[in-house]
Image 1: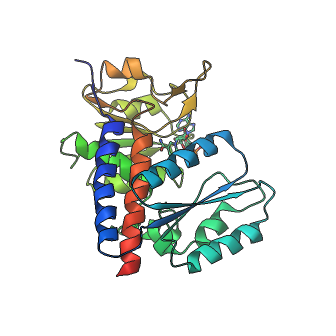
Image 2: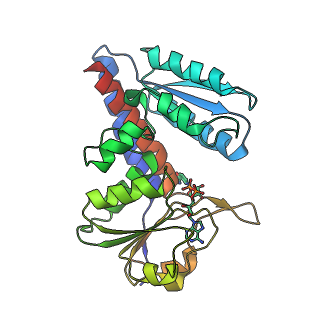
Length: 284
Ligand code: NAD
């Protein structure tokens, strides 16, 4: 039986509808609409698309989107000074710096400069540390969005073998921590992993975050597995494709996320739920 499609677009719409109602209730109670500052450096085409979608969705739920578009030539100290001003501005509840940054700017230093209470991407060492210790506060958006997709299957995750392909700080590593917190047995794979197909064949849950189009073959997927495809790649025809060979995986998986329309919308919905959470923490 072909896999059931895990429809991230519909789930994200449900999350944003609920957020819109909660933001309206905050405003009705006399509080300001949460403000999200999105900092974009340079003119990377993919980053521009992501940032446009984030800003549009922020406005769509009734929050305030504050745009800071800087040239690629901006110096690290100028960017750090902006972060400092946003940290001090009480009308800014969340700060997101779109990655990647130009090579002359240290992403680590910029992320560490963000006030952890405003770190709605959840990348600050403080927030990652809390996730490591099973005390999550602001959680990295893509992995947390993937967990919401897995929850939407209604399947019990406890004791399942989860194979995460990719070990980046923003997807693979926090994803593994989320799955561990959900009491999965977790294997993290990366470019030096031996026998990736053999490991994926054992997986009840596969999370692919590699950045290589159609890299994960359908024949690697265990019958009935839950497959979450984080990858966003542009195919030769200009269309977006994931890291998993969708058509072939569909024949074996139990659940499968499409690209587009799977993880991407859930990342943005989670960013906004983090922003509301940040605003509420700052209000308390
Ligand atoms: P990255 O380049 O930082 O990390 C890629 C990882 O893949 C690395 O850990 C590397 O070791 C691993 N890898 C590379 N080749 C491999 C191989 N042959 N076998 C096993 N592992 C291999 O990328 P990232 O930032 O983690 O993003 C991964 C993908 O997810 C990209 O396509 C990116 O566009 C996408 N992404 C999507 C969202 C979303 O919201 N849908 C969010 C973030 C990233």
